[in-house]
Length: 367
Ligand code: MRU
Image (tube, rainbow, N blue to C red; front, top):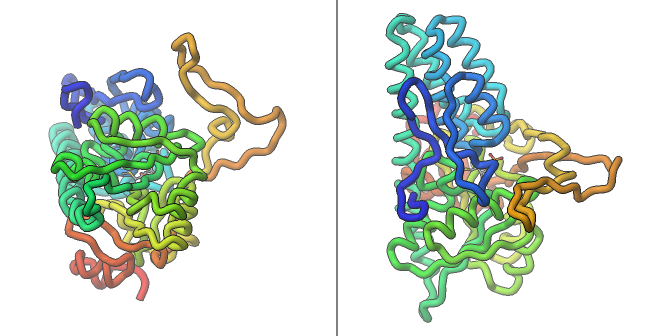
């Protein structure tokens, strides 16, 4: 997407066996790009959330394998890379998917020829992500068009966390239909949940929407229900880190509460997901999706820019209070109006998903 008139992606090969990323821990205050040179750099980038968002985690992991192969293309180096990258973040299944793509491509290939293949595969995974997101944008656009107001007032869309281009290689998942609508001249306005504890909505979604010129308003996490009660939200679109074969959806903590509020107020609740986010092996999201628990400091402290322009972290809790930091929650399929995929929009159910991905019949968990 465009940043100050210049096209950018979140990750790209930077030559000389390196990969460049936008360091998302500095946004929205500083747009800094950094280079990853080693497997360890890639592991740190994912676990410290310099890169984050399910599809981007997957793409970074694929490049991490390529970086590992640059240094040592042996079987043991490949296995180490797969293991270390696989342990970085537990909830987003795109990580496992991308590593499996890399493993199956490289494992039977002679070590001497692995380096160019690893780069080619990682580039393909990154390119594929962009294509999937653009396709979701086209399908989701119809849903936004259907909610247009006769008086030309903007379609009011609420989103949670950052499922924008910063969470992917480009275009985003939940935001792809929003950008498509905006670019097509359909007036849209986005309610952006701040998304504590790391504030991906306030910091990242607001930044990227602003850079693209999409009207938006940042709200505190608990505001959405009130807006829905007052007819101020036409539809909700969120992303997901893992969707079960039956259509249960894990996404950033707080998504479930938005789905409950949406159901209570008859507001359509859509989830946008590329197929690598579907975990066909599981049927019960609440019981089977591993929920990441992150460091307490993300709850006790908030990062922001001080009046003097420095990026600082300040404590918001009393010393000694206990803290829990669950990163994700699961929204059951019954609360979801539809899943927006690269192949179209379907009901959040096993049959719905299989109607778009019939080749998974026989593989998909559930009955
Ligand atoms: O912890 P994060 O920032 O990686 O969480 C990101 C999300 O929850 C996104 O909504 C999800 O990955 C979908 S991304 C297109």
